[in-house]
Image 1 (cartoon, rainbow, N blue to C red):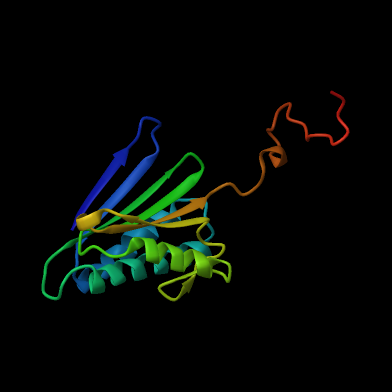
Image 2: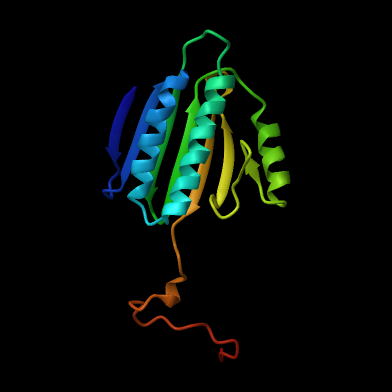
Length: 168
């Protein structure tokens, strides 16, 4: 197990945890993702649901990314910055048809979108599968952290709502 905090030029923290494809790593994945997500502005219920989604994603990688008996690595990334939270679960295992996985998810997204049996609506604003060819695949979940529009903030300064009857 390997944990690496990283910082970008703006001071926003990015966390990465690498675990082996062994089910004994799941409690570490749960603890890591729970603690990291509790530091965000997300409500406790949302954190709990996201942690479960992350854990199931890692579990699916443990079960299916590598041939039985082959050792492998799974990487979990959590990055917060620029008004969004980006969660990445990547394996370096066998290639899979990521295009089909992407289409299946997005065709089901109109009905609420499910990953690993869990509803993603209201939890992830964007869900994408990324292919790395023979180097595995990644699941990327993006959650935009804005709770209200810019004009609803009391510190909005001189911003005004657009008028429909504005003269040109």
